[in-house]
Image 1 (cartoon, one colour):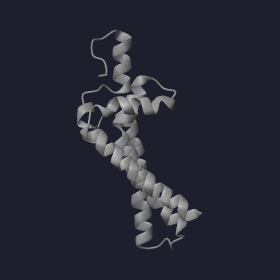
Image 2 (tube, rainbow, N blue to C red):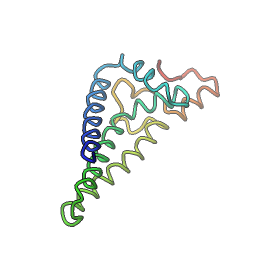
Image 3 (spheres, rainbow, N blue to C red):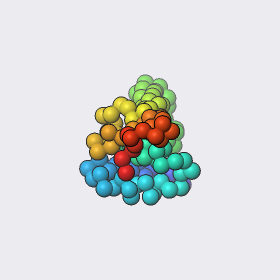
Image 4 (cartoon, one colour):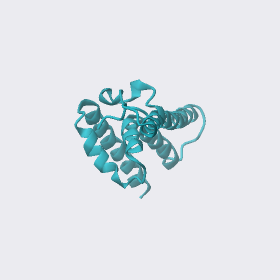
Amino acid sequence: MQYFIGLFFVAGSAFMTWKVAQLWRDADLVEHFMATFSFMPFGKEVKRGEIRSLALTVVSLWGVTVLLFLGLLDVDMSGPSTALFAVALVTVLLCLLCEVSVVLFNAPKFVVPPHMRSDLGVLAARRANRAGGSRRTRT
C-alpha cells in the first residue's frame, strides 16, 4: 500500500508537469485552468495567480515526491540521503515562497508562463480595481 502512495505521487507529478508544459506553450489553456480552479473560494485574480505559479507547484510536487520516497524507503539518513533530503526540503520551501510572490506580485517573471508575464499581481490588480484604474488583469 505504501508504494502505491509513492507511485501515485510520481504519476501525479508527471501529469502536472505535462499540463504545465502545455500551459507554457498555449495561452488559450488559461481559461481551461481558470474553470478547473473554480473550486477555489478566492477571487479571479488569485485563481489567475495560482495558474501563473503552477510551474513552481510542479517543482514542489517533485520535491515532496522525493521526501515521500525517502520516508517510504526508510533510508539511513546519513551522507547522500541527508543531502538529498536537505535539497528536496529547501526546494519545496523556496517554491512555496516564490509561489506567494508570483500570486501577489507576479514576480519573478522567469517562472511565469511567457503569455502571463504582463499580468498584474493580486495586490496591484486589486489596487487598480479599487482606484478604478485602466490597467486590469488580462482575460
